[in-house]
Length: 259
Image (cartoon, rainbow, N blue to C red; front, side):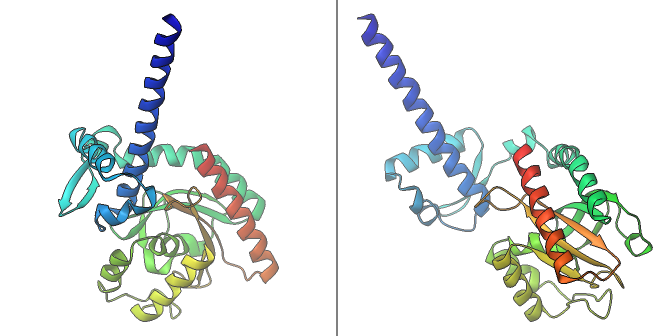
């Protein structure tokens, strides 16, 4: 009898864990999509029965983890803002990334940045390494237009098709140098290339003489939460650039792993 009771208890725990796992998977899909896609389409790959899907949606709604934004469409709920404000998370992110970026900058004799996308602008959370006159326009807590920076391109390229359509239609895009991409058509093509290759470059587009490489900070198969870059004011060979890119990717992975 005791053995049977223990067995039932074990089944209950396993069932509860399975339900929690399914609910978290569903919530991640909703959070990544941001309310653009109907849940019936969004959850196809999960393979949940209709009754299970509706039960999980009901629980997420009840706990204010999600909210209904249209027929069959859901977005993250207000409870997340109450539990973990973005500013607090950014502070944690910067704290984790700073020593890793400092090492990266020292090893490559460049300036390293960490940035996030806020209101279609890049907000710099960390700036460490060599200081050059051409980098005076970036500072921690400061913002820069996303279309002319490596970090901005990486983060824009990860956004939904609808987001990019709205962004590209929000011009005009002001040139910072004679190399700044200001054509929505050319910028769209550039962002498509960034999405495919997984990294972005800023070739004297934000400031004269300044070049940078940027990569996303994300788990495999997940949208990036931030991006990091190496910036310099000297012309590097293709080989040096590839070395910098490898170092950036390694640093980004370590930041993501620590998060």
